[in-house]
Image (cartoon, rainbow, N blue to C red):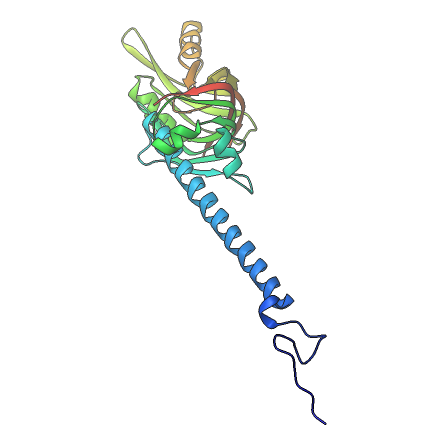
Length: 260
């Protein structure tokens, strides 16, 4: 005896039509694909925004310095978009191969900035408006060759070389006494002095005894300041290390306005 199937009914009542359901595996793949796509789009947007902000900041700083090329700028932070949207970057590293201001040149200049304020509209438009920096720590190297070139350019007849001591150097200079030229050598201490390097003689050295007047004049000749005008951010010199080839200088500044 045969039975007939009623129209619109399934031969297996426990089985639903395939058109009415999506396999769980396919659903999981679709969700995963969607999440990966969103993550890639966010990563691309984050990367593009970071690159644009880094380039803009590099050009902006280059305009107010005398570097031969724009600096290298790296903005820190795992996720960048929240920083650019609020217009404040928490961690910015900046490097210059060299910087100069007039005859004075500094090399290997590095700055670590925190709290760099760049409005979101400036990033979008590329506007070169002043940038506020909450705090900056930087360091630079001043070689003896560059220092002696600077001293000659400003008419200071003194040359500087290392002494092997922790914070002392050897100075050699001349002074005119009537028709005679007296040459002297001195040991000098190197200290931080606000926005400059202070050179202070501690002991005069000569092959023959110098008259008292000569010693006074040589002492004056050997006492001078080296202004660190090329530093773009540091307002206060905090430390100077006397090394074999020159001075390693550290400085910091607060509430700085970087204007183009």
